[in-house]
Length: 82
Image (cartoon, rainbow, N blue to C red; front, side):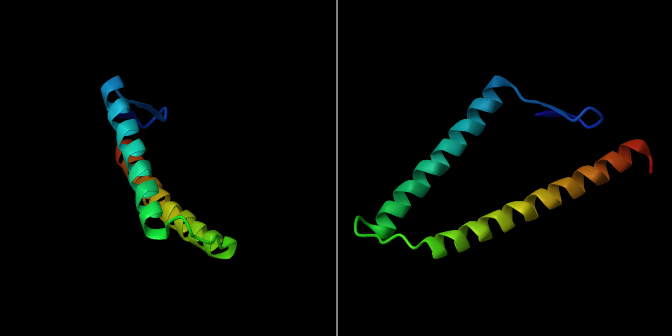
């Protein structure tokens, strides 16, 4: 993947895109299969627990995005000479 930090454009090749999509789909299928194995057919849905789990997932995603943006800021400062 190449990056143009000044324009914010990210370019990936078709083969890179395909690999990323395949990896994502594989991760989804693994998670679905492990959930079925872990919880079984008699699983009782608890909306409060599910909402709490989603909050943790969102917080983890926010942390990753924060670090990525911080790295981007540092790279942009290096490019501009600040």
